[in-house]
Amino acid sequence: MKLTHLELENYRRFDCLSIDFDDRLTVVIGDNDAGKTTVLDAAAVALGTFLVRFPDVKGPGLRGEDARAQTRLLGRKAETQAQYPVGVEAWACMPVASPDGVWRPREIRWLRTIERENSRMTSSKAHDLIEVSDQYQKAIREGHAGVVMPLLGYYGTRRLHPIERSKWGAHSTAYLEASTRFDAYAGALDSQLSEISLVNWFKAMTAQELDEGEPIPAFKAVRNVIGACVARITGYDDARVRYFSGQLRVDYTNADGQQCLGVPLSQLSDGYRGVIGLVADIARRMTMMNPALEDEAILQTPGVVLIDEIDLHLHPRWQERILSDLLDLFPGIQFIVTTHAPLVISSVHRRNVRVIRHDDVGYHADVPPMETYGNSTGAILRLLMGAPERPREVQDLMDRFRDLLDREQYGEAGEVLARLAKGLGDDNPEVNGMQSELFFYTDDAG
Image 1 (tube, one colour):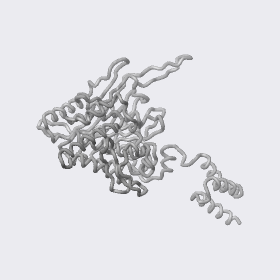
Image 2 (cartoon, rainbow, N blue to C red):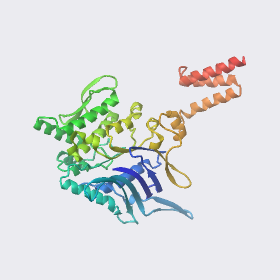
Image 3 (tube, rainbow, N blue to C red):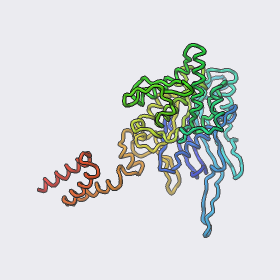
Image 4 (cartoon, rainbow, N blue to C red):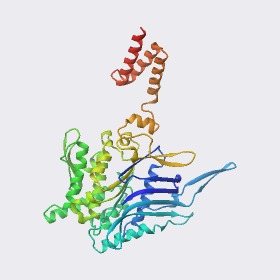
């Protein structure tokens, strides 16, 4: 499955928004409160339609509070009204069973709506996708192991927060005692990452390996992809994850070259936990939903993964490569992510970026006018994100310095430069360059 397009109507802040997605990677950016997370939430609502008839699995849907609030001034009184209909319309491409039994790619379009206040969400215009979902369910129940199920996943900004105790049962029992491929979808679009379910799955698989007396290919593949992920972060390829004494533990060499053995996952930094947990959750769901693929499940499983603030808790060195690493580790997955980090943006081409903006006409999701790949963080901050490259006071002094040079007021320019050198240090490259400029002009004038 690949999500190709979304259209939103009266969904939260958007009266209308149309956005298309690259088939491998889309990075959604914009100001705070521009609606980046709203786009991911809407995508999760759309994808949740596929799960409507899955047994014991629930996907997100539209709720009354999703209706856009419109405030109008009536005389001296402001009145706010919810706007209807609320709609999330989606287009996707995915394999569909043909009459001859062959699964072929087909574009599918569907719509989920709330037509009026106090009415329930309807999926009456989502018949095509639900019919395809039924085809997959039928194939699974009839034992067609060769039918490859698509992964669906949503990881929000609260992905590292503990799951509420009331939800522990739903996030542990299903994974520990999984008996059908449908269990791989439990909680997949909840936007939270449950370390409890991850630990329980590792516990069950470790026990099964011990019982059988030999490695389980799918379990080994999950451990290998986690190890590859950590190796890309640290530069050392000796990482492994294992279940021991009731916890997930990690053996690895950190970025400083220090060997760390048996470190509980819960004790790692949020950056490590976030990346390892994300990769592990994606990988294990793949092996659960497509067990016949065994150790090839991670390479061959298609699907859509949504990640809010992909740069969350990541060191700048990780930000620059996190997307390319995920694309390499999971070649069949389409990633749709949001970010505020210039380093993340500069790691992808402009064709993969969508800028959420608003003007007098309405809301837009545009490809940026400038190439982003390989561009400097300063240029991205200034030209794409509308933010200064450095603190405003420092920028003002630099602008003042160059203005004084242009006006040949070298004495005052020297005073401004002295203030900059005091604040930034004499060894600052830009200060050094400005000192050379001033020397050139004063020497020439002399």
